[in-house]
Length: 437
Ligand SMILES: Cc1cc2nc3c(=O)[nH]c(=O)nc-3n(C[C@H](O)[C@H](O)[C@H](O)COP(=O)(O)OP(=O)(O)OC[C@H]3O[C@@H](n4cnc5c(N)ncnc54)[C@H](O)[C@@H]3O)c2cc1C
Image (tube, rainbow, N blue to C red; front, side):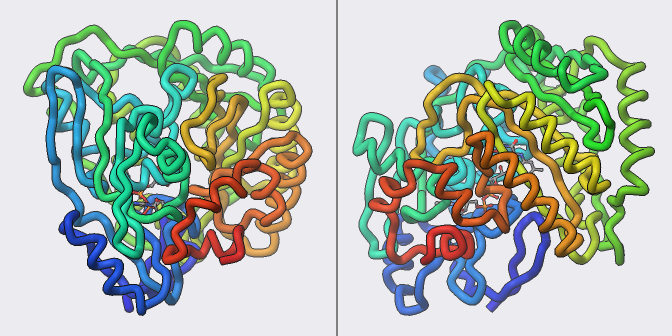
């Protein structure tokens, strides 16, 4: 038994860890371990809550499935094992003129994790989510059965597995369609705004001309000021020394006895951050790694929330009610005095998701980290849940450790259809909490 936690560090629980490293043997390994009870695939554990955990049970660690299988540099198609990191794919394919079309705010996640949560990036309005660029995948069930599927091959299995939270089996390999990229550079622009109302027209106008759009929002300011950030691929060709522009990552060296993030530290920090960036506003050229994944430069930054860990609360609400719902959530957060520097507001595009349980839906998504203050934090989340429920929105399971089952069921209307594809030998703390087994 090994103690395993997820990114929110809300606890460490014993797991019977089975390391997978030979993709041809995964079916045999899972079937042989069936006597240990249900298990769940675990990639880099970058999910914040319990979607990748199975306390007291089996954990199938996939990071040993780390081999590239094939790369067609002319067509931009890559076949790799599911434990390969998005960072390693990007570094491999960039010199050949390609990048991944969709990446989340960290590239330290596995292909399997990106598929199972159908992760989104800052360019959802242009290119959708990760699953939109998976051409096919191999799913191995806990009884050893192998299912190859894709958008045109057993599409129902594909739609269940993309965004399926690992509950349909273990993805061992996938074929990805890459996107052309002349080099690593982005043209970026930061536009400060004073009021939440300014965010929406900025988002609308930016989506037309910019591929990547996202906003930092000061969750404690009364009017909802923020910094709108947008970026496009720069037309600067790749050069072998480009990576030299990147600094060496630093590390959070210890777990402080108390969270470094508190109402007291947050207010002056947010104010300083807003004013500093307001002065620096305008256009710049930035490397995609430092621009798109700034948190990857501070290894183990999740330790700064102290020994009790932290939650992330990410919701999406329909655009028609987005302004009122986001305002109501920010008001609850401001009144509570909690929240964190990491507060992100973004719009999702008008497109159907590739997975039955994919999180992105057309609308506005707000994501915030909260230090774990026990019942006080739980009470705030109940008030935020009420806003999301009223708005007809949903919460992102990849970030969740506590949403009520009724809110999950209301937010994911294809749940009953999805459950037909569930692997009976797979279970997670999240599935038991939200589905009952
Ligand atoms: C700093 C930071 C920023 C983030 N930004 C974003 C963002 O912008 N957008 C976004 O969408 N997400 C974001 N995330 C969340 C993260 O992208 C997802 O949680 C992602 O799924 C984590 O991948 P992982 O490899 O760590 O998988 P894990 O967290 O280990 O597992 C995630 C899920 O995938 C399943 N899984 C893993 N491997 C396999 C496999 N081989 N077969 C089947 N199922 C599998 C697990 O069972 C689990 O259900 C962010 C996370 C962090 C820490």
